[in-house]
Length: 182
Image (cartoon, rainbow, N blue to C red):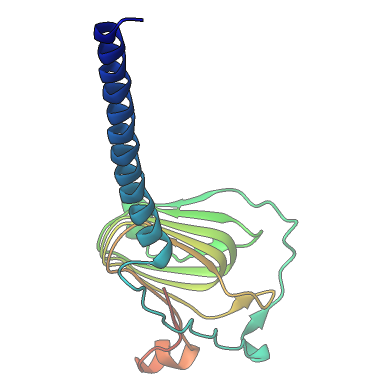
């Protein structure tokens, strides 16, 4: 090899080594940024707050009503027309109940599988239900008993709804209610 080719060859090698070194440094810096982001995710930035999980109120045996859950009653629907009759809805065979109305006061007697409220600003009083589904806002739902000793499952798809265990005395004497679920 002659001197010119050898110098040219060294320059190319130096340029390649320098380029490779720059790529490695840039790659390390980029990776360290990713690693830093991942570390922040794992370390919980900002630090999460810890809050106590409320313990459920024990069920009083006097508030338990037994029901045969194998029953399959018909689906009961309550709307404006039923409101005019002033009759309470009656779950006689572990029924599903759909209440489709706004700003009404509705009483549901018996033990229901599920009570679904599709409306706003209703006041619903039920003897007992295994579950409540609320599709609306500002509803106030009170129930008297626990079917088979279980607290109802609540699916609240709205805002400002209140579901609470009430006593028969509270309904009669208009006393404050207790044991809110939400």
